[in-house]
Length: 146
Ligand SMILES: CC(C)(COP(=O)(O)OP(=O)(O)OC[C@H]1O[C@@H](n2cnc3c(N)ncnc32)[C@H](O)[C@@H]1OP(=O)(O)O)[C@@H](O)C(=O)NCCC(=O)NCCS
Image 1 (cartoon, protein in one colour):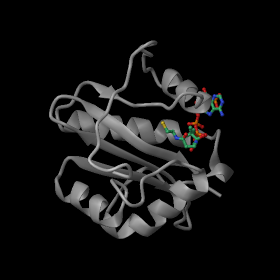
Image 2 (cartoon, rainbow, N blue to C red):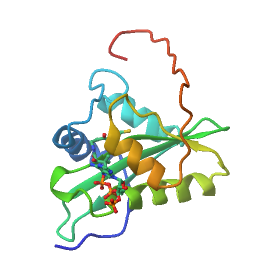
Image 3 (spheres, helix red, strand yellow):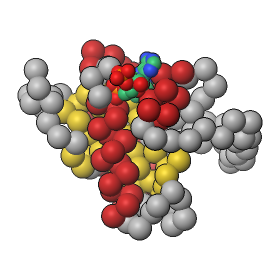
Image 4 (cartoon, protein in one colour):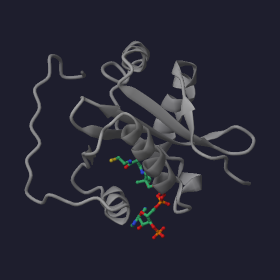
């Protein structure tokens, strides 16, 4: 089966986005920043673009959230359904997310990759990203599940 080109998703796509994150085994925060309410707020802010790739019959097989803070862009929650991996879906999503951020005037784009996620690290390196080895990520949150 063929795939459609990457396209923008909206808040009405939330249920199938969450289903895809689950199928892909992605670690998300369903009671925090990945809840439906939070997702709707992020989309309403205008700072987040959700991009998906569907099969020709309309099944969502890949998703990425592109956000920015005015200075830097971030690629979040990138996931590809296990049945559709190693076919360039994630690479297409990254390219589409980069285009969306460039159109918003954002020139620096980054992603956080959890330790041990070799496929994701390889993917970003293969997509032209530079690794900053030894960089420490720190965060402070209001609630443990935020
Ligand atoms: C990481 C993930 C998004 C990759 O999706 P994908 O569509 O299979 O990736 P692509 O087909 O676009 O791969 C492009 C390149 O990335 C690298 N890559 C992708 N998966 C890889 C793997 N499992 N091992 C090694 N390299 C890999 C390769 O260089 C690949 O090119 P090649 O297939 O020609 O060798 C997918 O495995 C996934 O959804 N994982 C679970 C969720 C996750 O970890 N998301 C990232 C959060 S930061």
